[in-house]
Length: 353
Image 1 (cartoon, rainbow, N blue to C red):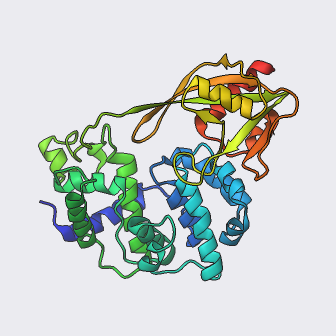
Image 2: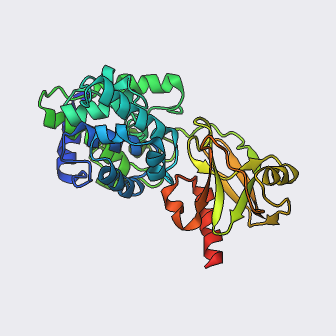
Image 3: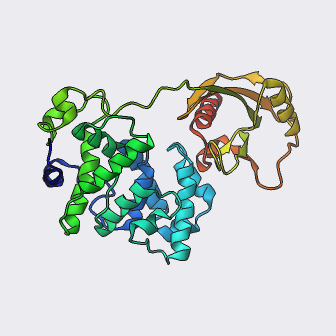
């Protein structure tokens, strides 16, 4: 079995030669850059994050700029990246850092973990990359590496298994006090899981732990880590109203919590008759025209969307509290929209050209 003392030494050596070194958020100790990347990378691939990351830095070059921005601006830039609670927490965290810490991120893992949207693993990553702290991470990539190399059975999302992984991960930390060693080790864990020890077909031949990895030696790469216990994914259904007034469409701001919280979307109802009443309430025709249905998959359920088109009848109702707005289709980029709503409106705009 692999000696625990050898793990960090071999991983650091591998990372310095074969790891990733040119990602936009690397080669910096700026905690703002690092924090932003860590939040965006939660449950999201690097290739997807890179363009969003660049746009965020261009629009909000530091934490104070992000803190001072309207939430709508933040949500609009985040639209399409998914898991929108991250964006709301990102904005709130920036405000806390700006107001309570004078724009300087705290350096300890414990203080970082108390900030909105930052859990134990993310706090450790920020502390390691920004401040050279000796702290362990345990994201999805790291769980996969540990489960395979050390032969850990059980679903990593189960508390008992996760606790065992935390204990193991902490025992593997390098003793070296040099911040560059800690950074290389932490980055190496991420790189190994993201480039070689991938979920589908791991590249065991090039892995520095191939000769010692339990999964590789016993041929259990597909079994480790154990998959999430299967559950039936429920399907929900909603009707969405596309109410047009010339080249504009009515958008309604969603509640701050729940799916698509804080984004602009289309008015909804539980069935077609109720949707006709919604259209009438906003001053539109009750005659609804069927548009192509679509399905959007969330983590825990699928949403079947039945969109219907209605036309405005002269003076239409708009809420006085700013919770609805008539948005020109040509300016739809300035609104934070859920991905399926954006797809629907893009198709509608294309049909009008």
